[in-house]
Image 1: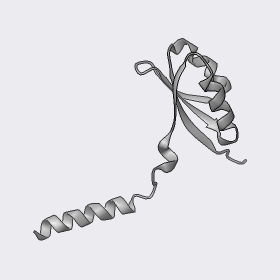
Image 2 (image 1 turned 135 degrees about the horizontal axis):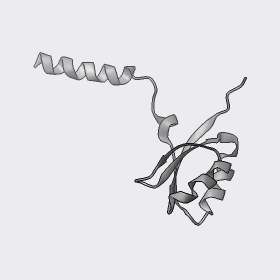
Image 3 (image 1 turned 45 degrees about the horizontal axis):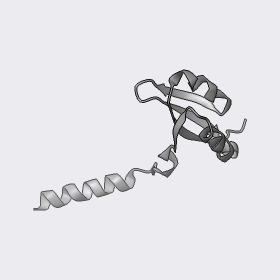
Image 4 (image 1 turned 90 degrees about the vertical axis):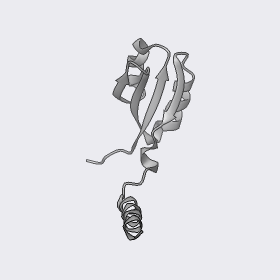
Length: 92
């Protein structure tokens, strides 16, 4: 079984009652009633095609791609800089 590459997409809506119509573009993971957005996972193969289709919908106000791929998963650099800062403060 091969895993498909997917991308998280935040779709902001004018009315949440239309959120179920977004199922045809991908898998709905979360719906925020307060902020009126839907988190979708869309296959990367059809991402650009689906983004253009969703942008054309009247009830979609804004679309944002998830920054998860751009965030470094390796936290060793963060730990290293934090430890360096702590050592510098102790030496003062």
